[in-house]
Length: 118
Image (cartoon, rainbow, N blue to C red; front, side, top):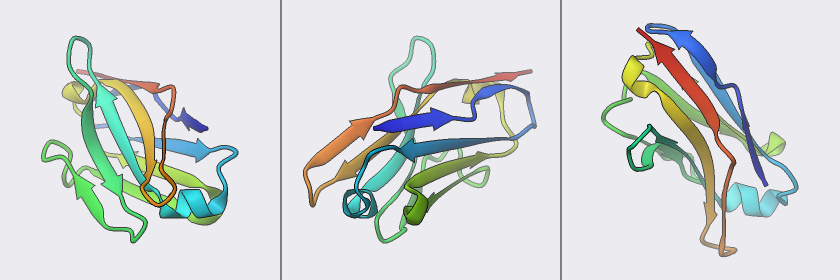
């Protein structure tokens, strides 16, 4: 249901924009969902990077505040993560996640690799 894209290899200080498409998800479910980006570095637990609620309230981890921006386009069933001033410690697999409490639906994407070289 969730398909990520936009990952890749970038030098420290560079930027990437991740996209997540909620394919096949009906609009009411997507619109009611809190959409989030998580990441998992090698040997570490998956951690929340940022989320955006159905009311467009934003939340960021302390490690990415001021550098990353999450946004959504309900009409396109898309969520984005603009990542600027990337650091080597941002390296990992980035996963898109949706959770609709109203409909009791939660989904994970397959992940996209982000590698930041020093």
